[in-house]
Length: 338
Image (cartoon, rainbow, N blue to C red; front, side, top):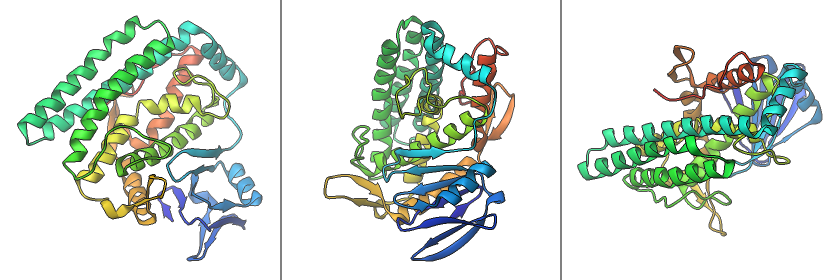
């Protein structure tokens, strides 16, 4: 099923082949032809398969191919040849292995995440009609903000992770307050497996977000596995996870909005015998449609001094990081919501 410039293959028995400049997606429900020139990404959800010929054609055309598990975890991402130049990647590796530089970049990323988190919770407080609930949310927003100055004194990655984890505990307490009024239970972040509908949606959307950043990072010539806050680890897209931190609160706001508006209800999820909760096929369809609309939303960007589409944020932030590593910018400017 195609939405805008991304093709989402949802059927577990689907097969993607290449034929005369197009992708041919076949499944028990039928077939669909998608011209390669019209898309920039292909996302396989679940057990969908792709032939080597189709994969090669996507790589040649610069179409990013990614596969997600049912909980949103990234199975793999395949893109075109890395752009940029070797000197940029050498600068990235140098920054990752330089404790001071890596610490400074980690602080900037986490500071932006905390600022965005407190703004999201503050917005929920202003929208809340119950004065007592609004006061509790406003208090949480202030508590998160109070953690930002502590990052200045952090002297190690573990220290930063401790501050971020403490703020996340306060933040997700606010998420719990808001979604409980929509009839959904949420106690804490659970990943493998997600234990409730809220975690199912968060995990799935985080997976989509990380694939966007992976493609953006590769397009500017950086190595998406070499992170700062998320240290390099074999098979982990650490740098994509780093930059995605800045947009997680925005993604959380998107998920909460869907629940508050009733766009996805209890019938959008399935529970497995092991206690895991996942989006149903219908729930995924509704979420993906809403996600693509969300990506088209315009939002102010302080560094660019103008509004840009949410879809462009990964590329903008990856470009700003590359400019910093090249020496064009004295510091990396993370994205902070207005």
